[in-house]
Length: 147
Image (cartoon, rainbow, N blue to C red):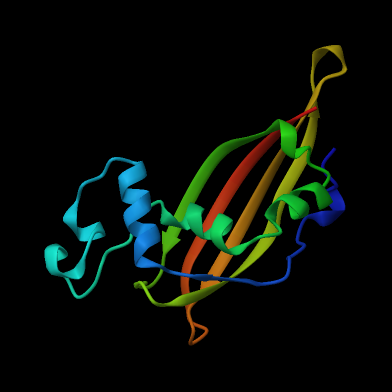
């Protein structure tokens, strides 16, 4: 069951390097052949653009303790489902930059259902800053864990 005393808790910072190859891999995985994700030359921009959902990758590339942190919250990671994702882009990001993310537990609760079943609902928020310490992105993740 979700430990409600963890609401407001922030985990230690983690770093993630924005790598051009990871951008290309994501574009291939989602079958998006937009040249803006492939190379600066074909994109026609100052640099390769980042797909809008790339922040989900940041969490898994950089936060190697994510599964342990979910367990620390009392969530059964074997029964975890993704409910919703939201991104607020604050400033441009480019390949070659390194971001620092800090994940905070915004909210959470356990709900009882019929037959002594329950679900945990948890909202996490990750604030990312660039190498200069300037905010660039806020990612909000909502998860459900069945018991």
